[in-house]
Image (cartoon, rainbow, N blue to C red; front, side, top):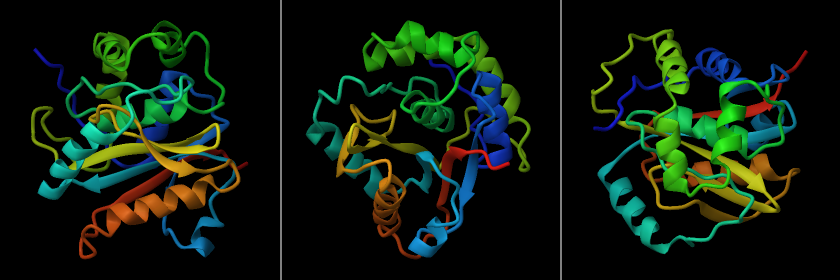
Length: 226
């Protein structure tokens, strides 16, 4: 029987509480990105380690995702940590795990995430997903934090109409990490200096699928400003 959780709210306060409970150093935090234009991106604190996109799921997305599942390469870069999402409604926490474990950021070695990474890094994406689903400490933290958002938390088994994915730069390439797909998606060359702009372009392509839709949200994992 699959494990269901209450979805996380796309709220930096909630998401930061979640990552800190998992053992992420407070040198890093999640912030909102309020615009994808170059002048707006200049306000985002550097370095930016990952971008997280929340977008509405349309029928066309389902067909696109099925197509991508048959076309993306099955052998991503061996240093990329990718996992399949096995926990229902956990796309937000999976996007955060993908972001954190593919970036060079400080983790408490005794924390939930560091211990999970140590045990899961040599497993397949499916095995990593199953291991996280069986991690009761991770599930407990997710459920506790999901109840603390500004909006009323939905029932765990309610259908959700939005989906979180992560973007990271790894060894000169821009990767889209979506636990509902068969493997990561390579969006071409990138660098630490151009990552934010490169990932923003891909986010714009998601948004262009329905120009009248306003329910998108973009967040960044970035250095905490003093």
